[in-house]
Image (cartoon, rainbow, N blue to C red; front, side):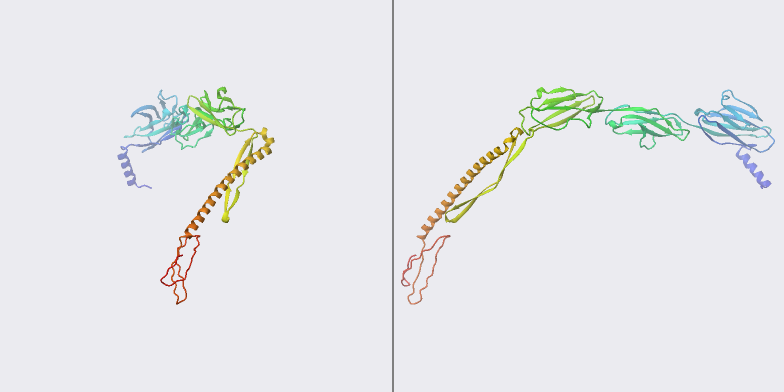
Length: 443
């Protein structure tokens, strides 16, 4: 319990700080959702208990006090400009029904104790009306593939809202901001978009949907039949483009290097051309298509390979043959003929003569190879024979030019010292005649 000195000190400080008022007034800030009721209470603590307070409410606008109501002892009135939604309960509570965002602002409660002087005190509070409007999604609805698209969720709210973006009923991954960017639009981005806003006040609000249209150059479908083909002489080739484009106003340009293409039939997305009857097996050509719309062009190409119907591939295989050749002085030489594969392609109409054709082909190949072997053997034989004859003649000539110097000592055992110069594959012939040391003989 406070002592008398403490009470006097408290009253002194209160008078000093609050201008020595006989009453203390406090008002708390209020937050409400738009459309709900707001109640602002003026808390009054009088210094004495006998006086009846006069409570006055103001709307503080731009620093000026606009009178709302004035009450004392249960009696009073609300100003005509506020009477439609403002009322006062028990002199000290200001009630605002069906609040609107425009009601947000600063309010003041002023209290005067009649008979006490000084007796006036006041306090202010802030009323915040929270709201969330239906958002609107904005973006450029017609773009070209590859363009950047920025989607913005425009929403009026208090406090600030978080946003989600929805495409074809699927929520897109996002950070909660009210802007969503598609960096490079593609056909897959074409569709319906909407945004949803939430600030924790009441229910979430969703925008109306809006369609994004992405224009792009022609693209072939998976079942498009402009593909490489194997065809036969006399056959008709037909190719048809199947695809999508936006806008779909397509033009077609078909070209081909296939002979006889002047008779080709160009019917927009379909192209027909006939392969000449004289085309040979293995020949190939190209059919090209350029598809164009207002955005750009796309080119496709197909390779056409000609094949003889039921063609049969035969191969004549000549094995390696070794031909031994023997010449004089037992010199052996061998001529080898390499393996040769000869591919032969024949239509099916000639298949009944396969055995005969193969036999004839092998017969002629055998004659050619035999002639070649005989010719090579003859050349080799002549070269070896000529070389052998030259060696023999040279040996006969050198036999006549071979000599030996010798000396005979009659008193001792005969010794012969040979100093011969030999040549490869040559024989030495020596004629010895007896004599003395001073006589020489020839070899």
